[in-house]
Length: 380
Ligand code: CAA
Image 1 (cartoon, rainbow, N blue to C red):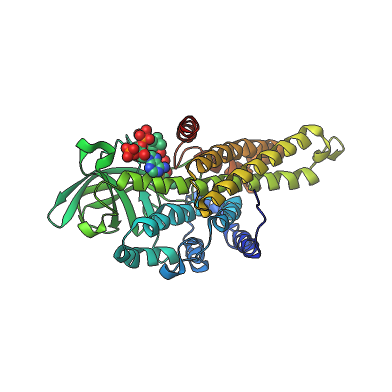
Image 2: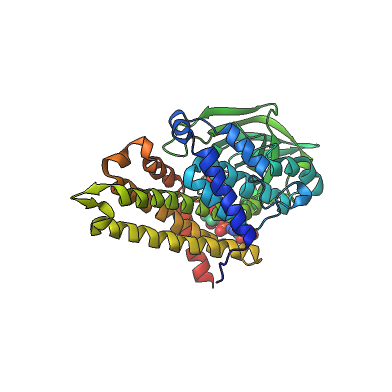
């Protein structure tokens, strides 16, 4: 595999790195503490093109490849995983799904605003009883004359209150099971659409996670994405790409914690020398670096597969599985390298450790990735 980055890739990576250091780092601890959404920063990310990176310029996007996207995701996630999840959902789950499967009218009306960050999107699949078991959708979308009527509850929705446009997955024909599911574009402010209380989270606390209630919400028929019954495939295909973005997020969290631990080990002294001179610490740094590099290879492989038109269900699931475990392991070790300082907020690693956990849960738990991987292995 050739991962030689082009000049453009390097430029995008460096722009994301500068943005993260200059705009996201100041205030990141306070936002985490107060569970405050990075509103101004997300607005700037939209202006800089980070929210619609892969959308074609025709619809207001950056027309970039997936490699560019994962490079930017890694850099933003090193500093602020709350900002990067907003970026990830908007790019991978909302913009990508719309560009690939929506009709021209829907793209002109919604995608053009989402690609520039003028609107923010949310992806609403999970339910109280349908997180991993995504075929068991209880939210219903019943067809009436020129519209559908939506009823049900969605849980743990990223951008729950800040989004303007919601892609909602719902069951239209229960007797057809997953083949009866549809995906709809729902606008904020629709009558009967209520945003529930904000979740109090362990990590990615700056991001805005809510449950959503749909009580007889009328959705025009023209807001259904694709053919009747296409909703489950839409969700699965969209999530396959989303997993590459979350793998890049996990990689960034791990790399951010590693960089802090490495710098700390160079200056912190114990037993008469910098702690990097003790094998107990040096070996930790070696393990961290190795697993991060292995994760980077998997993330880049999945991104390249997507850019090259190859199937990326398997490579994306492997990247997410491995990088999210790496994020968890590396951040725990980064706290350990920092000793007592690692346990306090100003050193950042405790936040990265809390943020890491979600990468093993959302857009398919690690167990779901293993289902995808093992099925693929036995099928081939
Ligand atoms: N691409 C296209 N089609 C796919 C597909 C894919 N990647 N994966 C499955 N399908 C299709 C299958 O081909 C099958 O279609 P047919 O009946 O026509 O053959 C259909 O979907 C059903 O597939 P399965 O029988 O494999 O379904 P399953 O019930 O066994 O479940 C699963 C498969 C992989 C476990 C799936 O349910 C899954 O991915 N679950 C996890 C869902 C998830 O990621 N939830 C996270 C919520 S979103 C989120 O976290 C966003 C956020 O806020 C950050």
